[in-house]
Length: 481
Image (cartoon, rainbow, N blue to C red):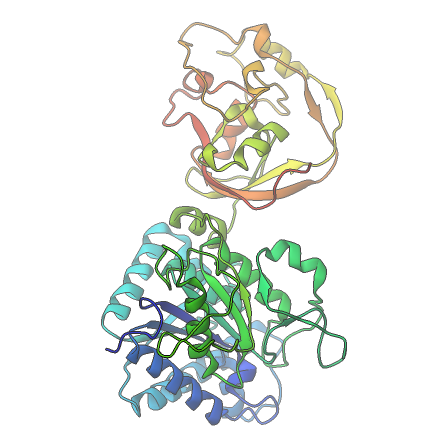
């Protein structure tokens, strides 16, 4: 295969929505757009890039086959149409790619398929094998069996998770506008384009996300910002551009790779931020013109695979409420994303060891007090104590850092000393999710040891596989100043 014009080969994920695949009124395939995209993908493959296509449209194609005017409201109706349309959709893609000799593969996923770590890794291995064979995987959500509890929500999110799974360099979200605007450009002539986004969280206050997707789709600009947040956190450069000109994908990759060409990080690695100067074409030193698009810069410290899986593919089974000190420390990369029992204030819901949990904080301070159960614990009645209903004690060693490493004590006969008990603020306020992680113990066990030095785990639980009650924590919301 030919070498890319700029840099090393990339792994590229391209997402195409229903409104770009079929006509919104007639539901007939938009063959000109689809053919142009197929030619673009084949061109990228000829340059040595690996490409994954995330394609919506199963329900829309089902509508056309059954001569129905609008999507049904019932879940079973949508699932039936998805079953009707999915076969015809993949046949359409296979026919178009087949004309140019490019093999494809169908990959149907639900969130439930990748919520199990083994199945997730199997999916990753399948993607890697398909790409190594030169095949273009065509990914869609398995709407025939998806229910609300296991749906990705929309294919923008699915494409972001897919790009994270395969460690893609680029994620292209093809939509009906050429970039992100401060407001809807169709209604507001003063709408201004935004070319580069370094923080999705910060850009939300500058743009309008009130526009919804088409009658055929489920997304809109908000879902694309969510997808960009997921993908960039995993180190994937994310692009919003128009689906009317799929050929621009090639020039956008060349442009952004040229911006990186002066860095020590190889171009296309998705791990360095572009330098903002006029890139030049390596063939003739002429400056490259910037194709219309918005680029979301990847995080300089992307999430590890396990943390990305925990944060975005698992459905939490419960919540662990932590104190502000724990929140502060977990927000630092050097914490390792591990929480000691000392930082836990409360547990909500029932979950088993190994399941995903929400990490939450109480935003407002309440009244400090110690209940009777905590007093009994402080008096040394650990061996006979039943599970506390509202434990509210913390070891004094956790005041400075409730998730830092603590020295192990021999607790075979030593009760909790009075000096290890401090007042904890209780609050009636609702909790806020700030991150997610994987529980090392079940909800009842964490509830039993909350607020205590981890050295007490063997005596209270009868064993201690780990001194950390939750691991692989990813903090999404930083602590308030």
